[in-house]
Length: 340
Image (cartoon, rainbow, N blue to C red; front, side, top):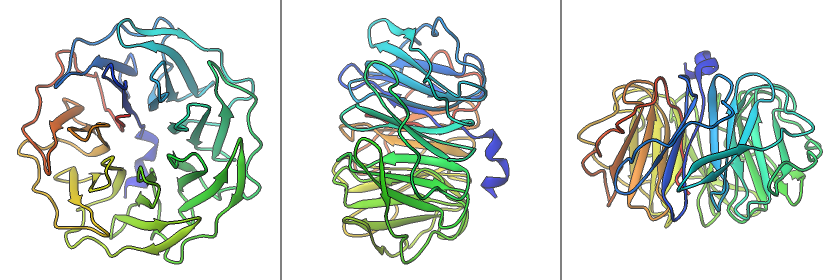
């Protein structure tokens, strides 16, 4: 089961909007690598002057891509750097005044860039702060806390909801959000079967997907001011636990990273799962820990725990020929990513 090795997990890749860069957090020094992106990997940016503590677990750019946040082991658990697509990493921002209580496995910003949240291993399992060129005062914890380790967090693009995948029943939770946590929504009528990972709202905000350890490996719910009905499972299920999920911006396809061959799968979506797309000709060589479509839906990237650790493909109603690997590879396991 994937949850038995969660201590080895991390999450994180995100590219710069417009200027096109991609960053990878992982288990090998320098724990974060960033590259320009233009129909392929460019020359790696210089490492940040203030190193990320070992090990890198989660990463997210602000929507304007002028800063990058990295989750890691050990206090302060989250490091945020200024970022510029020409010069790369800038100075590290001051740590939050009130630190989170353990490793940050997943990080997300609201679409307006005014808030940052992270899922982490110890109670309250999820934390959020205002963000404006630095951390503001930590928001109060939700009134109804999750009951176990926070594994993944995602804001609805509209900024009014935050979802959490976690290690204990009900395995997925959602809260109203407006400058802090609001009331927890009622649990879905059909819960994920077990230990769940990183949730993913569609851009339109009408769908919420979550990956988990056991069959059917991924679950999708309608969303409208709360959980709606669960959609039927895909005809061809993923072969193993699903860690990360992403939607195309148009909502016409859904992809998942898988902890078993072929390590990444994708399906058309139109009011439900269509027939699984063919696997890429060159699949990852190890477990899939992250997947993301580019903001224009023209590319898809996958993070893996085996060399070359990050792979990217053109996307047009299916996987194209894999792009050449970056000249300077990450030095160990990469985990999860998101184009923004």
